[in-house]
Image (cartoon, rainbow, N blue to C red; front, side, top):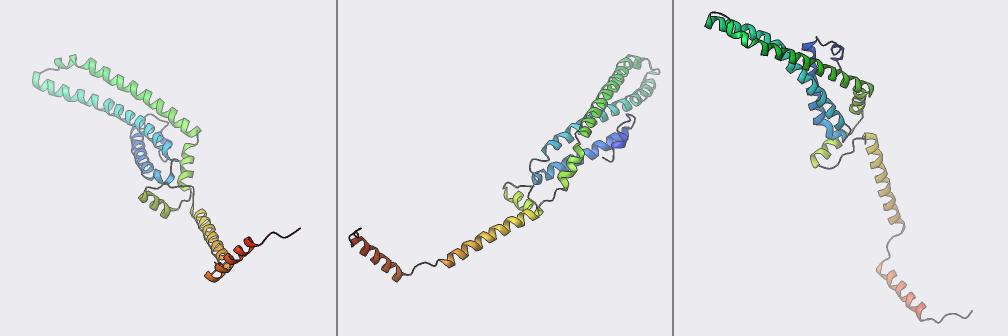
Length: 209
């Protein structure tokens, strides 16, 4: 976003190139940490790739437009030194000048396409969305553990939620322990008495109404 002030002027060649480099670093960073944020960052990887491609095409055209006139001057000196005149260069000039104009037109189209993409992202509040995702609290220790184990990680679970779940599990375990203490298991003698009583009841005839 620090380069945003330069994008509205097509003459800012160096600034747009610097923006492309910064965007590439941001894209690699998003790709590196996207597993921690599950699928939330995936769409923005493609967004950064699209911007990077557009700015890359703009830079390629800038290089052509800047280099070809220098090439003409260099070739003119070389041909004149070899032939004693610049006549042979005249056959090359129409093609070279056509290529220069073609790259200028390509650059203008790419630049307008880039502006359209940028404005769309602005309208969709994309940059603030990325900031909100990055600023969402996560359990870094749990994230690293899940990443190393290959298990699915839920980035929406922050430290507080994890502690609440752990507390609930602990309470449930304590309840189960307490219930087991309230109803102790019967010893062998009690079990035999109950079994004997059960046979006695079976042998008895039903009582008269």
